[in-house]
Amino acid sequence: MSATYLLDLLYLIASLTFVVGLKMLSHPDTARRGNQVAAVGMGLAVMGTLLFHPSADRDLGDVRTFKLLLLYAALAIGGMIGWLAAYRVKMTSMPQMVSLFNGLGGGCAALLAVAELKLQYDGAGHDPISTGAMILVLFTMFFGSVSFTGSMLAYAKLEDMVKDSAITLPRHSVINMILLAGILGLIGYITWGAGENGMMWGLILFGIALVYGFMFVAPIGGADMPVVISVLNSFTGLTAAAAGIIYDNLVMLVGGILVGASGSILTILMCKAMNRSIMNVLVGSFGGGGAAGAGKAAGDQTIKEVSISDAAVLLNYSGSVVIVPGYGLAVAQAQKICKELDELLESNGVEVKYAIHPVAGRMPGHMNVLLAEADVPYPKLFDLEEANDIISKSDVVIVVGANDVVNPAAKDDPSSPIYGMPVLEVWEAKNVIVMKRSMKSGYAGIENELFFHARTKMLFGDAKDTLQKLVSEVKSL
Image (cartoon, rainbow, N blue to C red; front, side):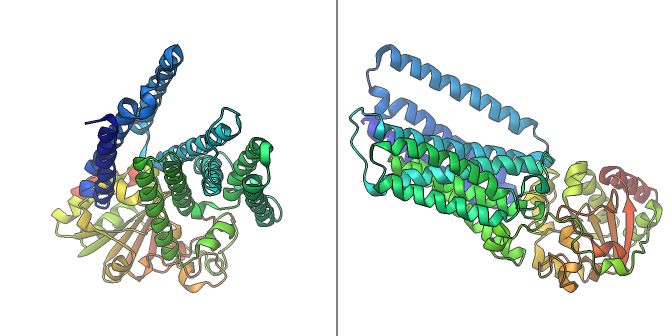
């Protein structure tokens, strides 16, 4: 069997592992194995390329040896950095890591496009590519660059390294439209009219695309960051697929299509969950304002607090309890103690379930992953529509660190930026306990009317510490 056939076989196996792995990621019970299956497939694809790709047979002498050493060194260093980063990252920082890794993938695809463009203009006698292939190279450069700088800015926003007000400009959307029009014009000019100056204009295009990626994400507020991450992820997938076409590489094509398609589907689902269009998310600049949405809550600023002992009694003697996790649960790393409270209540005859909003946290599926880490059974997790039905029949809802996804303003305040967004209607339960550090607004920067609702009682403090005290109090009853 020739090396080419062996390589094609390995690429086929790798492609199948991507599909199987992605399918397994759809359920928490199999997600870990799915990730491992896909990783094995990628390993096979990389090793197959190194061993059996036609370029590996070229007799380049010392130059070939030096390049191979650089290649293996890059693989070793990059692999070690990636493994250490993934091993050490806290669950609260997972969105940042996803943004960082996703951006690096887009940057790699953009650099491949630059390298391919250079081959066409370096005078080394390479066969000229077709017009369609040139357009594909330039669009790969464009989307890869946007994914890179956009993801880096998303990372910085998630890390609170930059503030929206510091990086947005007057008429920002108009500036973005001008940049986009300039990029599309450059793509057309390089393809049909640049001639021998194509490389120079290509580098200009590369630079402008990097700037556009930053400007693209700059006005998008924190509440929309999960959607932005998903959009940029789909961009990276598209660039990887395009690179697969450029280099006639099956595994890059299949992997890129899977990432691009899944990212696009996830983006649509999240926009549907927020009752907003993708264009509204990308150009609406929602989520950055601090004063918006305070209208109705301003009429009655009275809050009611509950003590640990009273909360423990209420929970212990309830028939049904629903827990609504949010980013505050992740920040406090309180998922395991939350599971302990869950088990303790159920041992006392209380039915405990979890209500998960599609955009809770700062990354798609953030809460599902968090609870899976604590071994919360998947059947106890209920998505938005089912959750609201359960909530309306429950005795107590505990909101642990969630904010914007339980805000009544989405239902009854037309002046609120989140009006019309489907939310978890926790105020329909008989009793609501909101666990928060303070009265500070959520990531969307708007005040939460739930805090002043007649059925709501506030339990202030660190989520982990408060849950531990609740567990101790319930045990003493």
